[in-house]
Image (cartoon, rainbow, N blue to C red):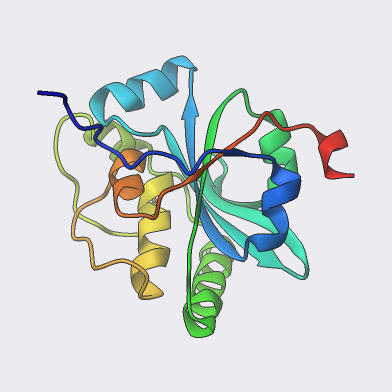
Length: 182
């Protein structure tokens, strides 16, 4: 008997230049090979980081919980600098859901939340109740998607892999270079 993979397979590899025009609000699952990424995947397989992608004024940005807090950065810069697997989950949202997700993400950025270091450590040993005082990446992403009505309510913090399981099948981003954007 063959064992089923725990996550939906990808839709295939695609370049950022080909995928970019089709995206409005999306989720990025990052699968890194750094010691921290491997540790996160050891305790919660399926991904090591989560970002929410947003089209704002014609450009794509990523809203994500980082060491500096919840920040906004250009998607192309993050993709170019990353050495690991990048999965992009396109979301089929209503205009109201897309607008709500964008507003929620921008509100979190303006709230200047700190990073949830304690939450990250606690997740290795136990479940953690969902709050937004100092979120980790998947916690902030889950909050945005729940409040925008995209996924059902979650009462505990999901890992990046746990959130990935609730999302549509992703595209695997082909190796990215800025030259490919032209």
